Length: 290
Ligand code: NAP
Image (cartoon, rainbow, N blue to C red):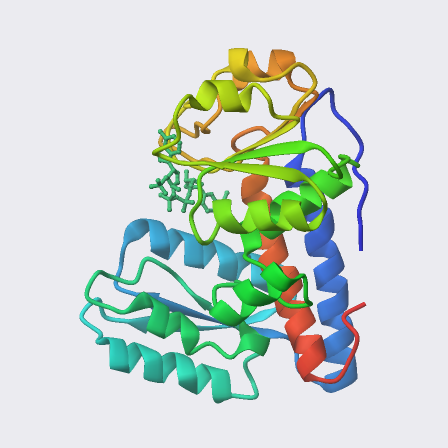
């Protein structure tokens, strides 16, 4: 489903679009409850008590509750072993009452995070973190995508941004954000350049971009002077003080469209998580999500 969004100057309103997507998920969750007698259920797994992770998980549970999605929370001590965590996640994968699994990361340096992620059954990988999901995305096959890249693609589509043949510069190459968003853009026929910490002359490359995706985690790394006039600027960065990776004030003067921070990419991430959870529940119940 594609939701076209009204424009507000050159701002891309992630908050408003996410609200509409969450409402669509809530409607779909209500239909699933009506037809199966059980609401969709997202299991959240948290290791330790890192304050930021506690907040993220709580936010996701609250949004789930508002959308009629049940959550089941599993809190594990920071000292949990890889084997114990894998067992817990595998148990949720096998539990027919659970439709989606979110393992909040980071999980701690002593844990083999990849092993824990791989214990998530592909049909419950609503956060798009398994190798199965990543490969399906790479092959252009159906599956769950990493939520922030999925949210970015939704925003671009909602604002009717033409991707085919356009030069997209993705700054950042993490497995959950930069790399998959570049692959999704490539899958939509954009010409994609990846930049990272070893890239030489980042400014010169960004200046060539029709679409810039900033996914670094360095406050105001990208200056407005480097934005090609009319370019679309997606700022996924979130740094202390509610600041993105792009210098918003200078970039907004040149960008055709730009996401604010906060209120751009952030809310879209949770919206995609809820949507994928509902889709997982529908598929596991033998129903269509919409
Ligand atoms: P990450 O794993 O730390 O990756 C950062 C990437 O930026 C790496 O690929 C790194 O390059 C690159 N980089 C670092 N310094 C650079 C520089 N000076 N020039 C160019 N590239 C540079 O971070 P992440 O998890 O992808 O997150 C990135 C940002 O997005 C953070 O601010 C995070 O808070 C935010 N985020 C937001 C959401 C949301 O829902 N809105 C979700 C996830 C993340 P190397 O690979 O060479 O090290």
